[in-house]
Length: 229
Length: 125
Image (cartoon, each protein chain N blue to C red):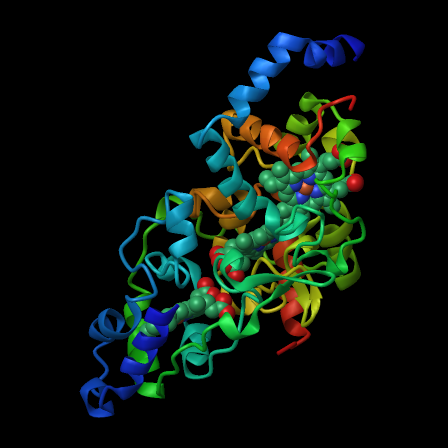
């Protein structure tokens, strides 16, 4: 924690001129590799999982929508209400565990040019192509109410994910923005088997049927049209 | 399950077993604690009492694993099945997830033993 604050401060003090020119690879090494794994593999032990400071980016090119990455890096906002490994950011309260907001770091913010260069470099990182079937997701629609019924009552996903700001579980990333953030074919692959991407992650494999995988992506797309911020 | 209860109460054997579980820093026990922190705290809470960060909007509250009465109503096999296959496998809520995709049988057995430490109880008392 102390170290990451120290690092953020050091990064903020770097003269802006040193970063101009936007060599994405170099920016990634200099400003991002301290918190993000750019080479793999994902954590294999619980100790490694707990020590992870930011999401793994060595498969960014198979995971993110580049237009979202570029925007987010210029105006980052929280995605995981309790941080990376939630256990590092909670404490006991009078009525149960609470999130220690002060322990959650602010994300470094990039200028437009650096964001574009970094995004281009990130999209080259393509581990995991063997887990992705291009075109696996077949666009379709589902009503918000049917989607919510599946996500909550039938499959129990709401326990860990928020479907609107302030509603749902908090140990996983919010899903009301997930269709804007991630590629549809990645969503299908990840939900089918989260441990194929991240062997020790604390999202369970719910053994979803092919049909349900598709419907969940329909649902995330419908949620993202609600334009929650 | 009376034979089982008898088995647990069987003096010498039971005592030897208790000694074995309590003896020294057994690496199996430590491991179970780490697994519980990683996978179970999010709902069952840091104290194991069912008050994790996820409970706010859950329609069924997670089991209080320190509740000796409720936990002693379960056999070790039922606990194992609930963890491996999820709540629905023991006719409980879908909100209790199946962990077979990430935990080995050995790890799940160690978690069952850890739950028995949390509740300070055995099946049937």
